Image (tube, rainbow, N blue to C red; front, side, top):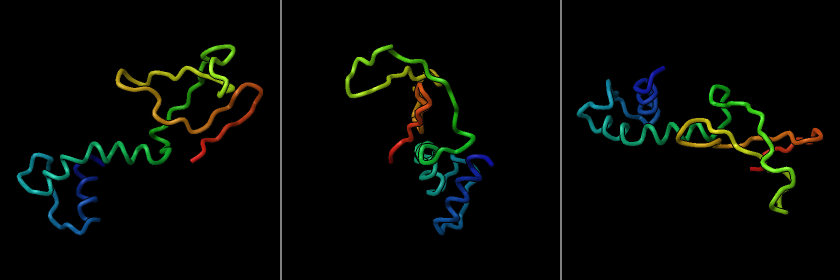
Length: 104
């Protein structure tokens, strides 16, 4: 499914019957969708740990003895691409097998 198909499904769910064929269409619908599509898409990807959008990694300890007494462990986040680091940490298995779940 491509971005235009996703946009048309969103329009239909909003009760708008006029669909678009591209983001550059002269319609009001295309103008609105093209303005918000990327932001909404990234927001929806961040809302849930989708299998296709999750990457599992082993993190290296940042320091042997944590420099901040409020944290028992500190790890180096990996660089996913040149623009950002790891966005969300869902859970962590720390030395000794202790499992830490994210608290919402």
